[in-house]
Image 1 (cartoon, rainbow, N blue to C red):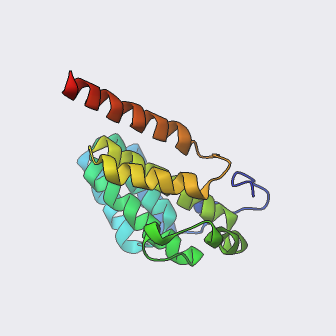
Image 2 (cartoon, rainbow, N blue to C red):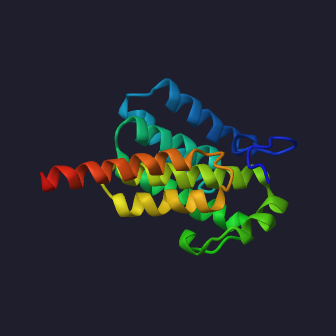
Length: 172
């Protein structure tokens, strides 16, 4: 199965949101860097807490503001929300490739989005120095993405190299 096949797949930004939510997201992007932008995104989240568009806007805001703890919380919220829509177990650690067929039947776009969330939350964990958590998320991505369409193997190689370098420095 090619997880990057975009034929007839709806994407997170295709989901309708109330006009007020769309306006808040657009206003927040125009006010980026001003604290009012975060308040606008929070209001959008309050109005549409299950909107993937809102979650992506919040994640990007926190990530690019280097508020990685908050970005991670949003990413984890996304994993739970999308996982539930796809019929996945509550804990991503219990997910295995057998679940993918069922997920594809529900939404290929959501499945791809879930895979991107695995990578994003893994990466943010790594940036926060949580190597074990980050590595576990990236390894789950690789387990599910047998063709490595999301680049998990390259990220795992970087983790292995970084850990090896730390060990070498510690023993030198």
